[in-house]
Length: 115
Length: 115
Image (cartoon, rainbow over all chains, first blue to last red; front, side):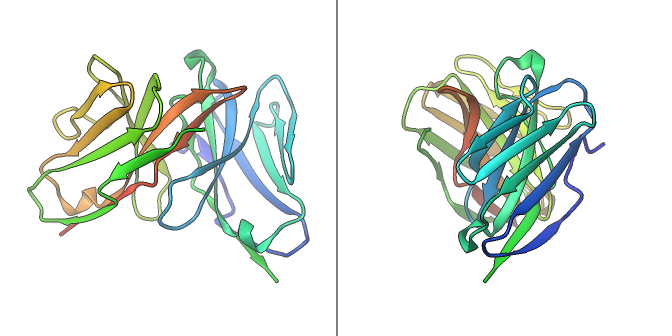
């Protein structure tokens, strides 16, 4: 049972354009959401997070949107750069843990930013 | 953030043997975790490494197969016991930090191939 889903295994975007990565979840207990970027042969790198009390969080070129009623979140990257080419994972943490623990990860979306 | 190192970075092992993976953090942290990423799959939480007590394992993972030590607040080990080819994965440790926002930071991973 995949509780966190990233239905697009890959995405190709032109440099300078917006990249939109989507993530859906099924567990209503999830309260805190994170996005990670992963390059080959490296561990995931934290990008941005959002708690369920917000519907938007912004950090530089990265913005995460949360739609709790739809159990959907998205990561927007504007403008996209070639260095953004990586696999992006969304992850979710349940409320009762009180911390960013017991993360459940999605299957990842491979983003390719082309010149 | 935290600087996390893992040893070894990669290994090739024979079936039936065991491998111990080390995780070192540059600061004291309360919560450390071990994850597995099987080929083409997402990250799956194996266990939470608790300092001074037994690790807390997720469903599908048992102590006999994945014994974990956490002797202090900066170090942990994960042993993959009696290995089979199905254990070929990337094993990652992570730590949870609170610095304005809750997040988990990951080590670079240990790439294991079991023949």
